[in-house]
Amino acid sequence: MPLTEPYDDHLPEEGSSTAAPEGGAEPGAGAPEPEPTLPEPVRQRIVTLTAAVLPGLPADELPVPLRRVAKFAPNRRARLGAPVIAAQLTADPLFRQRVTARVLADAGDLGAAVVEGTAPAAADPVEVAALAYLARPRGWRELIEASGAAVRAEADSAVVAELVREAEQRASRAEHDRAVARVEAEKLRDELARVREELGQLREENRQVQRTLRETQARERRANELLATERGRAARAAADSDAELRRARARLAEAEAAAGVARASAKEARSVDDARLWLLLETIGQAAVGLRRELALDPVEKLPADFVADAFADSSAVTPAGTAARARDTDDPARLDQLLALPRAHLVVDGYNVTKRGFGEMSLEQQRKRLITGLGGIAAQTGDEVTVVFDGAERMHGLPPTPRGVRVLFSRKGETADELIRRLVRAEPAGRPVVVVSSDREVADGVRRHGAYPLGADSLLRRLARS
Image 1 (cartoon, rainbow, N blue to C red):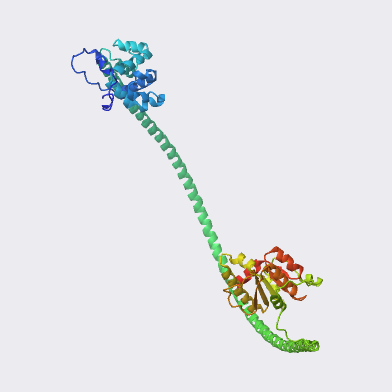
Image 2 (cartoon, one colour):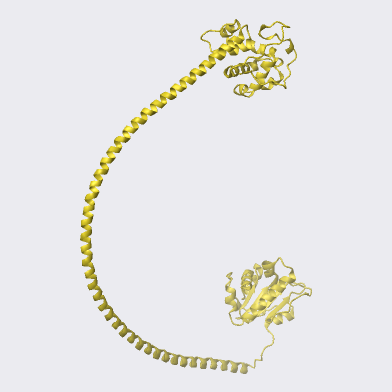
């Protein structure tokens, strides 16, 4: 086979046309002979020898396609640059001569022998053929053909040796299989003997099981007889139990009748207690009416918060010292329901403090409307007085109708809702439960000093969410 495929894209370097004719042919003697067909090991060895000497050649002596290949690592040069190297060796005799000079120098005596046209008998035929292809002395084609014959002979010998090895391996496997078969046969004979012994044991066990079965059947017959006897005894015991149950039911009926009489007596006694309690409450009510008449107290039309709403002025009244006793500091949301359950409780709400915490994404008008509507529901459920205070000096427009029981106040110009809330708390009498809803710490501290119950805005928001 040729050394490589035709390399159409390569042009020889300048001066390559002056290379000596191959094989010592005379100039003008006609077209050169075609490249011989090289065995694959010879071709690979030629590429390897050429790749090894590429870095040692001057850059101007290297063909352009091989200059990049010469920079490869040694282990990659022959593998990746093989096609380019083979093409240059075939197409560029001058490059081949330069490579041959360095390869023969490295080969030593073997290279000198190949140049003389002879090859030592002990030399590697592949190495001889590769050197002969590069040096091309007289008779180099015969050396390559002899090397090819030797390579083919070695390949045939290797095939024969492989066939012999395979035959020996098959014979070894057959012998091994026979030995294994003998061992397995011995195992099977031992297993057969063991099975026969187990069969004898099973037969003996079967006889014992049959004997045990007969004894068990006899015991079962005796057990059935005893069961029939016990069933008769159980039937008599069940009859006795039914009679006792009937007697117990009769006693239960008598006890239920006695309990009914006792319940009637207890009901009559409770009626007497109820009558006494009603009489006591009636006496207390009449006493309260008499006391109101004695004090000449007329029914009131206004509450303390109404006076604060009408006055809109600061009060200098001093808070009684006893009012602080009714204040309780707690953040428990359930505390709001407990406080609103007290008699005549007054709920005061810091309006914008609650709305901006609960639904601040709405407009102020929508916030006021939502809060006032919710407070109307609380007033209707509890019957308590409810006052909501907003900041605002100007007159507010767009207010919803005020629900029954809810008072809506706006602070005057120059006054904050916090100050108005404190005035509302101070206006209440000592002892009346006043609940102030605000998350403002200053408001909470101020109303606590005046005896009110401060709660956070979250307690009211959760109460509105349940409504």
